Amino acid sequence: MSLLIAICVGVAAGFLAGKIMNGSGYGLIMDLVLGLFGGIFGGFVLGLLGIGASGIIGRILVSTFGAVMLIWAVRWVRSNKSY
Image (tube, rainbow, N blue to C red; front, side, top):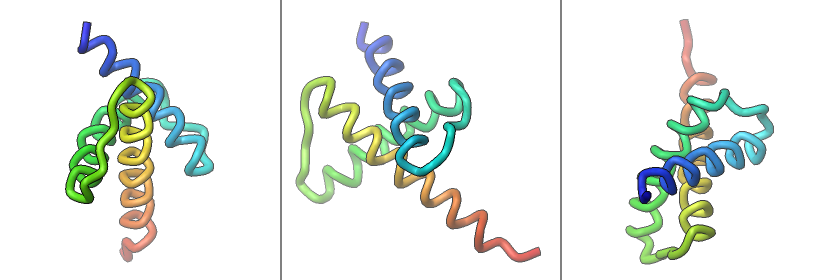
């Protein structure tokens, strides 16, 4: 059951991050992956800052924060490439 919840949170977080970052998202699979990795990254970063969240809403917020940070980082790296 917790895997199903993690997948739902990942999809929701990836979708929200795509909307926050002025995009249309990256498709269902990439939104899922982005949300799941965003949850791990967001939990790590916010944990270092001493900020924690509980419940489904808290998980979505933390995952969205992490996914937004990942989108920003990917866009920053892509824009600074010089060929």
